[in-house]
Length: 159
Image 1 (cartoon, rainbow, N blue to C red):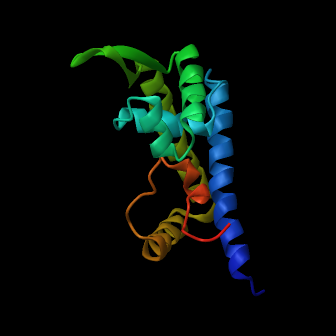
Image 2 (image 1 turned 180 degrees about the vertical axis):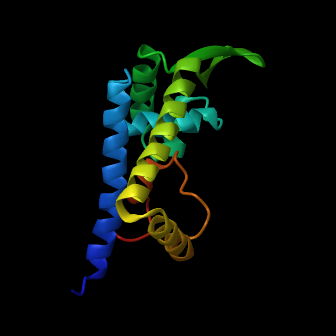
């Protein structure tokens, strides 16, 4: 059976979505029922230095207002906090809290478990071969986790 390029793209996207949905469901079972993929993207961006709504918006390719709403949700849930900037007392910096880091650690562990499950389904060698092929096709540099808005980026094309 011959598949189209669009079929391949949808299979890859489906694999991503299957893993993410399973990880979110497992986080829910582990007591983190309020976590969504965008929260992980945001916490990773904050941990990497996005310490304001403006900077978070730039890193996530979203508006400053959307970033501020995401920050408010993360603060309300205890995943991030605002602390006074040691260099400028008028400025508040964002930081991931220990609870936020725990959510990210749990998520990473869950993805390892899901990878192991896929290995059991198709065989560890087959999974390693799949990963090797994908590395050749897409490169070995990981996709940045702080850029979920990449599909909305301006490619200089007319609207």
